[in-house]
Length: 324
Image (cartoon, rainbow, N blue to C red):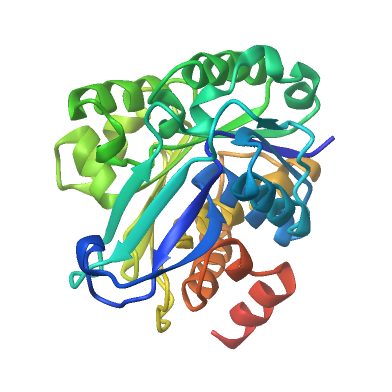
């Protein structure tokens, strides 16, 4: 059974071929399998650890492409359900002139990821893992929401390390009040939370990363990690606060950088679990080692086009770190 299991959306990203334009002005797309939890599973596998993905796709060309791509990346797809009654979820993405992703999802009323039911999930798959990862998009609709919550209960009941990515996508929520409430609900289940500085401000309503991460820790996480793209990242576990500058690279496609970063974080924590080391009472140097590894994963990924094909191997990450 895989050591790291993720649950949630697997979809096809339609990536604009044009630079610095919104979706309405793009002239064409390339396609690539994606979805944050699926990307994280692929990132873990590419780094040499065992991963599995729990989710649902349609019995269509896009669904088969996702399954094949995950398997090629080394991800176990035993719990990837293929359902002929729903269509594989699609996401259209452009990077506008402000370097911000512009998203449009084809998911409501037809997205296969939302149709995942808990009775389709093998509990032992979660029980036999070491780390369980989920994101907030699993809370945007039923039956996926209930399936995710029950899966989290299994993970918590069997003492798995639980990771949460708030991954805010406003267009997928009925309103932002619901989004905030569900994200806060997710915080109480998590040991590790990784989010962007923009997501931190959305949840906590403070621009201060120190204050914002302290607020999140009160909901229950043991560690909060905040990324700021090309600037830096922060780690706060309530006892120690660390900021680490980002690596300077020439970004080609930032779509999967955050998911690669999460994969790097989980791989480093998995290593500590296997070595029976403490997970949260860490020295500054240990935290910096974890963050540098994750930052290298993200930095390499954004220099390449696409998401899963762009994810680095462990050797690539180590060679990158040797040169910096």
